[in-house]
Image (tube, rainbow, N blue to C red; front, side):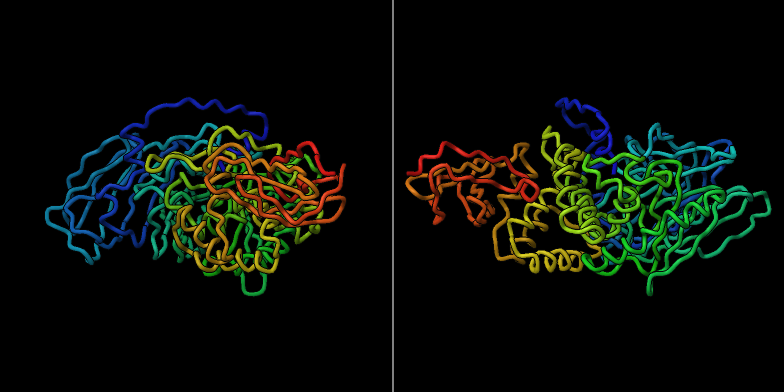
Length: 542
């Protein structure tokens, strides 16, 4: 959730065409030095000095060789110091280019070999100016003037604070072990489950956390503060809330919507995808982020988004936006991940759609329609939702509302809720813990419904205009056509003629339908269900 909120509160985005640089390609590309190995596990062991805003330690990286190579690329921001890189007791040579670290081995690594290197590093990590919209550390104070620290790096990259094969194309299948030493009076909360704490006998205590599931590298996190733990349970799912000690009672009351939310999402999307690691919310000094199994929460225990209704419908004040949205990411973004951030609508569009799903579960279909219609006002149509590939570049922030309304529109174009909910359930199950792209999503929708939705996805994701439905009467019959940029656009749609609903499938050329029209007939399309433009031409029925 990075750029969308700025648009919602009146931020005007100015897009300036510019060529991409070597630095962009190193961060977002897929050269041999990245594709030749597959990361299996990260074991991060660091110390955080709040006073000096300094971190030091190492990351032990286990990987399997996919293609014979003597060189691999890892990433660490250039302001951070590389202390040494060790492999089989040998100190490896390396070169740095921007944030990329190219590591050379003394012998050829052969396909199928399991390897491990330990990357020692230190430095003052970049401090975010306005997390979570820019990446980096947040060194803050709670209201009692005690250290309160977090990190959020979506889009910027996990290599802001630890050495990693950065990007979304390779998740460690065997999870992450995260050991974070902090001053004794503080606690660290990270992803997964706490494995215990160890006094370091020098004024620091190390907190150990382990993630058993695959995890996006930008989701690996730490949260340092004066936390208290609240425990709960939903059937066989462990639920924890880590909040600042003085917010304990407030949090117990406010988070009552979590269990109904999880019940709703599990009924529509399938079981919580990281049960082994548990579900938790962690209070943070920034607004929020979908950190897997440690969802960052900073909405100040308010309904809506910081007390505002982003939809303008009134419905947005019936739930905590950050709790619902960021938790929806556990299925969409954390479990199902886009290979390239150019396809981030796979995270954000589906997740904003999960808000509609929650509202329908809690408040009913009509309230959901009202909320969905309100989201239209947040679409800017400034540029395509899908960004350029291979250069670490997202598309338009419209990926949130327009992506959600695309799914909402397809649901009503399909006009078969039984099939729709089966489609969504099967999508979550089929691609659980997988890395995919837009083409994979479209192919799945096409095959599951036995319909071709490719032009529909193309229109909403790759173009800025909405499709326009033109309707007219010729003779005593209704004729219709779609005006769209995508080739062969032919989406089914339901319209009403004098109050009677009809489903038609117009083409790009005028399509004569079986719908009878009288002179001065009233023709409408329910804009709460279809995110399109509608043009009724002069009625020439006789």
